[in-house]
Amino acid sequence: MTEEQMVEYITAHGGEIYIVGGWIRDKLAGRMPKDKDYVLCKMREIDFCMLFPDAKKVGRAFPVYLLEVDGKKCEIAFARRELKHGHGYKGFTVSYNEDIAIEDDLFRRDSRMNSIAFKLPEKIIIDPFSGGEDIKNKIICATSIHFQEDPVRALRAARQAAEFDFTIEEATVKQMKECGAELRGEPAERIMNELSRALSAQTPSVFFRYLKKAALLDIVFPEIAALAGQTQPCFYHPEGDSFEHTMLILDTVAASTDDAAVRFAALCHDLGKGLTPQNMLPHHYGHEKNGIIALDRWHKRMTLPSHWYYGASFTIREHMRAARLVKFGKIVDLLIAIEKNPLGADGFCTIISADNKMLPAYLKNIHLILELFHSIDMEKRPALLKGKQIGEWLREQRVDVLASYIKNMNI
Image (cartoon, rainbow, N blue to C red):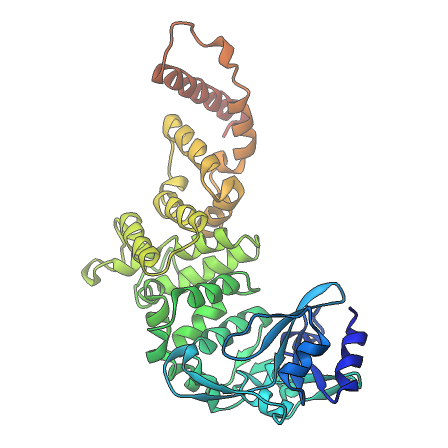
């Protein structure tokens, strides 16, 4: 079914249909719009089902249907009002009927830029809260006091600021602060969803900075919040404390890769500095071990994707020694471990380069060295070798290959 056909059926039976949310927001912002979501007004649910018998109902608290439009599964939701009566995102009483206007539905939404509708077939923009002006001014403003009724909206505002390079108005930051108490009880999956999307944003640090400004960082991501105020030697870190350093490395890595797992590892590389005792500052001896403790706490509280966890733990353990190794045997062992870790050689080296502002020679040439390792002819090993003796022989060959390579390259 085409969109034109769907609209024709609905309007012929007295209904009104609108495109809402991200599609119209991105269209107005000049970005490539993605999936369309529709809101339906002035139609009973029973009549909709008669018109579109193939539509699949997916909403429980209120009617939301999936319908194939122009070859894509699209959501069609009935216009609704919401009344907060409990805690969290489920603590709402929802009302929906054919008398609810599109303006009522838009009023309950989080920000003004997301409270815009596009009426079909007339192609009229319905913007009762001046969200279009916010888009022009690159600012995020809460539509109403209802913003704080779903606490995850605070994370969404911070994430969208990072995605779109927008600022958040002060009054909305204050509403974000009011979300703190309820955020403590939100399902980890909702927090994880916002974290994942924030790490894919243009400038991920903006997400964490706004959460810090709204006094939410210590509630949602206490391991990151603990980095604030943890001083470092100024000679090596003129950017400031461990939080500032982490934000700098995160954005530097984000400028080089879209891989969320690599970005997460960059975020976590100095996680252990948040556990450094105050009497040890500005030094952070042993922060590699403390970093694993902090990461494990995070993982226990909010199950992380396995490749994120293992990539971050590897980076935490190895990021300090990677730039300092000089013994060929230890370099060989690390190179093999880097190749096997979830981030891959390029991901790990991107973090080390950002953290140290350079790469040691063996990491600059890691792909070539690994290629030389793999070219070692296993058929030439002594016939009497068995079990781990074969591994020891192979390691010795790799050490010789590395030594020869470094000598020939005058590294």
